[in-house]
Image (cartoon, rainbow, N blue to C red; front, side, top):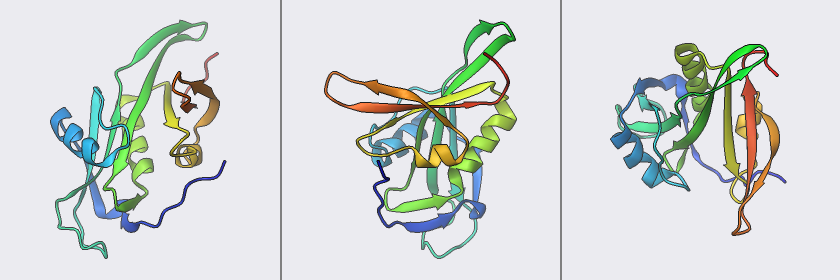
Length: 161
């Protein structure tokens, strides 16, 4: 299955600053820019445009949001594993923020130190290419009663089995 490609205006993550944001701001942004809207999350991050670029967006504008769950912990032979779910990622609906997902992921890994991050992508809208390019591996497909399917992806950051 190929990606559904749409042409977007570009914003570069290097022209943005990553900041912690609250649930209310994440909810507001995601309700306008994400197919599945928002969901409760533990970690909320936003990218704000801080340097002028060709996008014609005002400086200080929130251009992308990522949210992550609290840790889900389980014991393995290698010790306690802390796994997190990447719940949502969205940019402004008419824009693609190049490098944003990498910037969010790097910051999350550095600040939270997860052993594992997983996510689901809705296969009716997206094939997960961006996550795969960040190192996430396919783990299977989850089917829903309404005929929908989601692809489960995982990024293992420590060695566990």
